[in-house]
Every structure is written in C-alpha cells, then in structure tokens.
Amino acid sequence: MTDTYKNVETRPLRRGYTTGTCAAAAAQAAAWMLLAGRQAEKAAVTLPGGERLMLEVEERAVAPGQAVCAVRKDSGDDPDVTDKILVRAEVSTKPIDEKSGTIEHKNGDITLYLSAGVGVGMITKPGLSCKVGEPAINPVPRSMIFSHVEAVCREAGFAGSLWISISVPGGEEIAGRTFNPRLGIQDGISILGTSGIVEPMSRKALLETIRLELRQKAGRGAAAAVPGNYGEQFLAEKLGIPPERVVICSNYIGETLDMAAEEGVKELLLAGHGGKLIKVAAGIMDTHSRIADGRMEILAAWGAACGAQQSLVRQILGAVTVDQGLALLETCPGLRERTMERIMERAAFYLEQRAGKALHVEALIFTNERGILGMTPGAGRMAAALQADRVQRKE
Image (cartoon, rainbow, N blue to C red):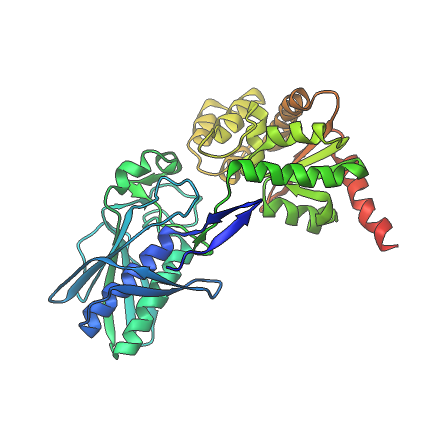
C-alpha cells in the first residue's frame, strides 16, 4: 500500500486500512493461488469508494484443493487494538470444517460460502448488522470478499463452488479487550469496515478543530452539537437546522461544553442518537465505548423506577442496542415515554452541572427507527431558533 496521509491541523497523520480490507485482500490472493496456481505476493483491492490499494501478502501456502494467505492490518496513526494483527483467508474447493453459520453468495455458475475461523467472532445476540448464528463479518467486508473472489473465479475461468474461511490468530484474546463479549459477539473480533480505510484523528487535533468551529459560531450566540453525521443529518432533515450551525463533537461531550463556554457560545443544543447520548444521563461525558457504556443499565434503572417488572428489567439488561431496550419498554403502554422523560431530566441535570452558568445547554435524543425520543424542556425553543436562522438567510 502506498502510504496516504490526512492533514490534521499542521501534522499529517497516516491513514490505514480495515480488517475488512485485509480479509478481502487475503481471500483474493488465496483464490488466485488456488485457481491460477501462481504465487500472490501482493493483492490489489478495490474499496467501496473506488480507491485501489496494493497490499502485501504474507503466509502464502498451497495444498491440493486449498490455499491460504494472510494480510497484516495497518491502522496507520489511529490507535487501534487490532493494529498489526494478521487476517488470514483459506479458500478451498471442499467444505471447510469451521464454526457454524456459513454465508452463501451465488451468482450464476459460481457459489461462494463464507465462514468464520479461529479468532473471528460469532453473533449470539440480535440487534447487530449480522444475524444471530452468523460470523461477525460485517456486510461491507462480506461484499468485498465475495466480489474479489468472484472476480478471480471469472478471470481464471472457474465455475462451481468455493469455501472461504476468515481467521485471525490471537483474535479471541484481542476481543476480550473490546465490547464484543457484551454485545453478544463470542470467540473473536469482528471483521469491520465501511469505507475500507481507517481515518486517523488525534484527540488533541480533533478537540482543536471542535474549538475552532465553536469560536466561529459564537458570534451568533447559539449553536448545535452532534456526535456525528447521523445527528447532523437528523437536525437538517427533521428540524431544518442548517449544517453551518452544527458542530460535530465526536465523543467529547464534556469538553465540547467546556470549550463552548470558553469561546462565548451562549446557547448549545446537544442532539444525538440514543446509542450515545443516553450515556449522558449517567454523567458520562466521553461517550466512546472504550471509556464507558452503561446504556442498558440506564434504560433498565429508569425503567424500573417508572414501574418495569423485574423480569422486564432483566431482559433490558440483556439487550444489545438501545432500540432493542426501547422495544422492550414499549411492551408496557406508556413505559417508554415515562422512562425517557426521567432520562432526559437526568441528562439535563448533568449537562447543566458541566456547562455552568456561562452556557445554556439543552438536549435532544433520537433514534433512526423511532425519531425523537426525548427533549429537555427548552430544546424545542432552541431548535426553532436555530431553524429560523436558515429561513432568515434565505429571505
């Protein structure tokens, strides 16, 4: 791979590539060795956005009816527990004796079967992007693996079935340092990636970027802050708040409040998906999963306070996603609404405590499936004021 860089403030940070990209590259190389009978020292991978990477191939091995290759993960300058791991692919003309949950891809005269080997997790709880019983190989990496192996089959003139197994040496131990076990992903890591690229962002540089945006918006007195693109899109599409009034603050809720007050922002509307912002109701001001979770504990505790029976509380504690927890609350009429009202009260308490007297902060929590779940008392007024700014400028 030719090193590529992303400038963050004045320091260039090197980009990396995901475990999904590694898996696709390793599978392509193994298929090429198996079907064409040639050594594959490099693999050319096309990413979802069209960019092409040339990755080094390690551990090349061929036996009758099977081939194995590996590609080493490179996270660039982004801190990642999976950096430098090997992602290994075995491609065979016969079924591979691996974990259950094989995924089938059929296109004309070619059928591919994908399974998880040692170190790649299996899904045991609902609510994730993969179904229960399937390998923890996310949809985009799956598509990349299938498309790259199928392309080799076409080029080599192969028709029939191939079996592909993705494994990660040491993956089970690495997974123990992530939230995979809690999410119901057992026995290994997930093969992830949406763009195929790991975009580096140092914490210091990101905070300085957030401060700069807050400083630019301070002149108007009010701004909105969201953890990511979902929040920005929701505010634009559902509430008509223009993106130029919105700051993406990532996981740094508390520090964003601090900086907003320091830079002279008078009013801040904090809006985000329940999967992140519900954590604020427990006083969690850095919402990254490496720092803290507690989403289900918050839903369960306030659900219990609002009348949920013990059996329902236990089910909520076992849920994987906030939407799952909300669906359980909805089995009792009005319970979700009462619970979210109390959660918003608690979120308002912690936000006001952190913001101090210099900054007036309100909050809005939503999910894509349910829309707005809750707002603090002044959030509607603040959203209307931010939306009005767009209307005034159009006039």
